[in-house]
Image (tube, rainbow, N blue to C red; front, side, top):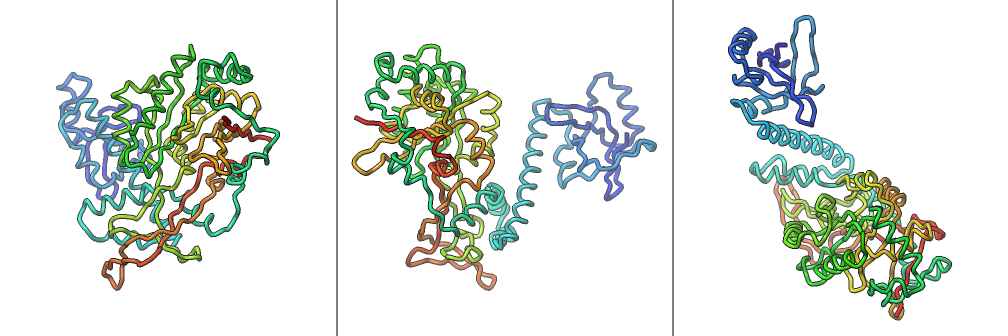
Length: 464
């Protein structure tokens, strides 16, 4: 079939073959007239013609009109598509990479188009001004930042902080008596000493937890502290070494899927550290290292409609970590939740580094499973204070619920002081505040307790 550009009537060439490298059908179009194409193909017995060609994705938005009678295809190629892939014959690897890059650019363009619409609806169009000026790299950087914002979560966060609704999660953590019938007191020595399980009263929970691990029904999500100066520190190493030792003690245990969430500037160091230590026994095909989610910082105001996203420069959005509660959006957007469901995962440990943390402990999974709860929360009480960090066991049903509905995440607004720029009379002006001038939007993972009924909650107190 002859391929013609719909807008200009320009002849592109003739379809020679159709390929599929896993991402959909690709038309290999020989450049030039149909007569030349037939002549060249008859002279070339190879299955892949050597004449100059272009690759055109056979998608409705690119090939909207096909006339079977005239044997013509009328195409609407995105800007640069024909030029960027008009090359002599390429290897399959090069073609796959070319198509992959092109698809990523298309996805980015679609995200930016959708983001622009949302920003105008939220009266935040001022952050788009940087796209009208600056050099190519500056504008591209701003476009990527805009496209990376989770607007569903951001919109919810903005509305959530405008409602002064009390959260029950802090009360539950501070005083476990509210769920007294589902309180389980675990001696610290029992938790930390993996080899003594047969000698304590929790043998049934241990057995249940071991069964979950052996059948690959458990997963681990470790959320590191965004304020840590060195994520790959002694505590991080202790946790992973401890898990490695636990797997040696607990025979026949298969390493569970493992997700690590860290600040963006630490992602590479975490990945390198895992590689250098052979992933500490984790299955390399089931390990994800994610960058912590960030949300824009907004101006300090009690009125929702007057809160504006602040800019560090015309091409840099002022953003801060969205808190541990953003893990649910991260698991969903990175399709990790989808993988968990496909693997048949039943319980997920979501935790942060602390002195009392043990990764993948059978007792914790077994305690949640044997009591058929949606959330198991481990805490250690010292006087009237609870330990820093968090350690939760969530059923896959409750995890799915949290990931499906961002409205279940409770946000708070933290006053902060930030220098920023504003567009005044067509000029960018630097604003240097003398006091708090903005809000950081943050959510805590313990807000899962707000959506969990008391009879589906188990509190595991660690006692001396």
